[in-house]
Figure 1 (cartoon, rainbow, N blue to C red):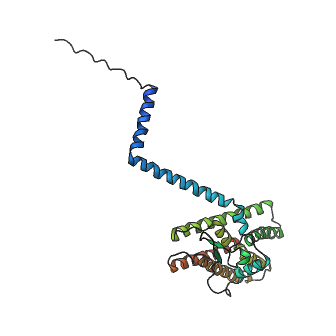
Figure 2 (cartoon, rainbow, N blue to C red):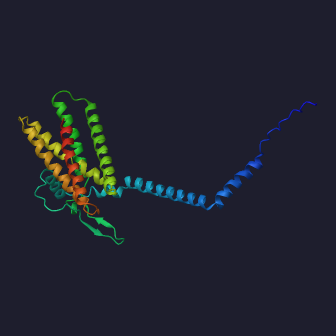
Figure 3 (cartoon, one colour):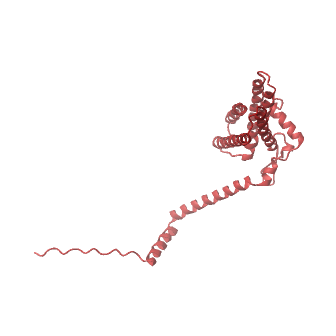
Length: 265
């Protein structure tokens, strides 16, 4: 009986470059002729294009000079009335809705701040922010403990707090109402906090017992009411439950009292 012959394995010959290119062409041709694959690629391309356009529009809006200029279009009358509204909002009755006209494309064109007391601005927040940082430096200087790092730490802390609050409120607005306002509107509203904080700082500098706590309670409550009316008015055009908008606005206002106490510490 003869012994079995060993099987010699055939050597694996790697495909040549031409064969690889042919296989790749065949693969892409199959995708091109497959209706499901073509539909998937089309949907993915549309999403990518929409995301790219959204990103460009958002970034363009952030660096748009005209968009920022709107919030600094103020005059002396507006500034005085707005500060009065922040520290004493109770006489201003009704719904605080912004004034606007309908453009040719049926879009809302809001009046500039100097023409509408309910419009947000960034002039008062900017001046309040600078004044607050300088007031903190003066406070530590009067105690002989001022250092250059005091101003930088105060500035950084304020920017972090305001940025976090803007992001949180915008996120909640989108989750609750499926709506997203311009971030500059939120930046304006929450940065008005420097007005009551400066008022409390001034009262505290008088060093009259218990007067600082009375000022904190009064200006904190007034600012909370101011933001409640402001946010509720800004959400008036959104089609959703009134109670949901009211609760959201109340929570925003109450949080400001906590923020004022924290900033005064």
